[in-house]
Amino acid sequence: MTNATDHDGDDSRVMDSQSGAESVLFATAFAGLGVDHSLLIPWEARANEVGARRLSGSRGVEMMKTLWAKDKSMNTLQQESIGTLTRFFEFAAVAADRDVIRQDEYGNFMVVLLSGAIAVDRVQPWGERLRLAETRPGEILGEMSLLDSGIRFSSCTTITPCEVAVLSAQGMDEMMNVDPKLAASLIALLARKLSIRLRMVSARLSDMKPGDAKPRDSK
Image (tube, rainbow, N blue to C red; front, side, top):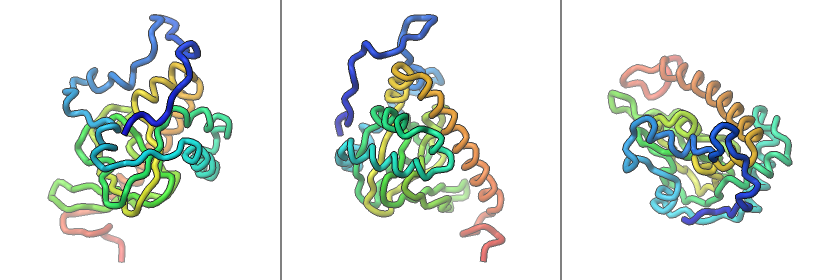
């Protein structure tokens, strides 16, 4: 699947005040950690693998605006800012039973679910597959690896046909160049949502033991 969005000319980009160079922080983060580039799974490769179809940008933008307006964290962004932000995303439709993200791989993109449902699963060290969540439209997946360049913690598989918005490392760098204030706001919101989610997942995992299909206090 080719790039879904064409951006404006380079004259609008903001250069780094120290070096005069554009930001490549996210695009080069994996290499900076010593990760072999051949191990990196970009969205373009995953989109081709799962047969993702291009989604109308105008449709994707309106869906994101509607969904994030209802989100307690993301609604702090103004509608105008969300409209600006979405120019850095790609939009796609993905069939059911497709792995958008896989556990233990390196990936440099995050996904916003626009419609449908996605299962978040993790294979435990003893081999059991644990369902961590079933996400709803508006929720964000994969932001941890985009922010810290770490290995994927879990797999994200479409339960139903889904429409998604995807922000790659290159898209994040472009946002930092064009609108650094907006990029900083988004990163802060992602970090907050990620912190809340990790606390919830940590509590769930700590309540598990080998052979449990669900938390020990569940009925």
